[in-house]
Image: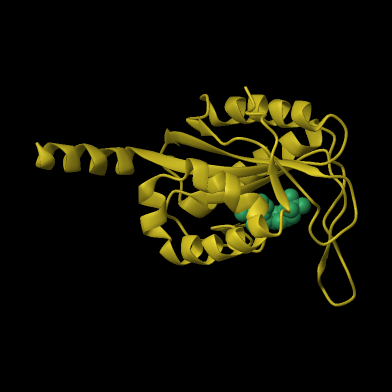
Length: 197
Ligand code: AMP
């Protein structure tokens, strides 16, 4: 019985890839923007999401602006024949097209020291994980490097993270637990009661 269970899990891991995204909005109708992003992501992924976190309200990090709504979503898609990097970049293009469709027009901006300058945005979609793959490309880094020190990513993510993901990336989840604890204690995160669709 255990043997059969292991075989099914192995087959699932080979035939499918599990993709995690974070979602955030602090401009316009935030809940509607996130609902639109989910509809468009379902279309781009060719299936309905497998799991959606609750949405939380968070203060902007690194710039002054209105409060964000943040969430995380998980998909399981047939594993593409292309390499993880090629498939990941194609996915990033789709994500960017979705962000533009929802009204995001800004291009990434950097200060003189090369640090990212952030602004309010109708939608922000990041690819957090693409299976257990590691991608290092000038346009795409996976796992997303900001996961462990961003409570607004980690709080929703851990609601939908499968045990296999935590096992594959223990260093991210251990570091993230610490930053979530600090942030929750300081009262910077609050659940909204919204849970998407
Ligand atoms: P954003 O935070 O959405 O403004 O994205 C800024 C840039 O980060 C994008 O243009 C991507 O090329 C780059 N990027 C690198 N890694 C990722 C990732 N895992 N998910 C989304 N964007 C990424």
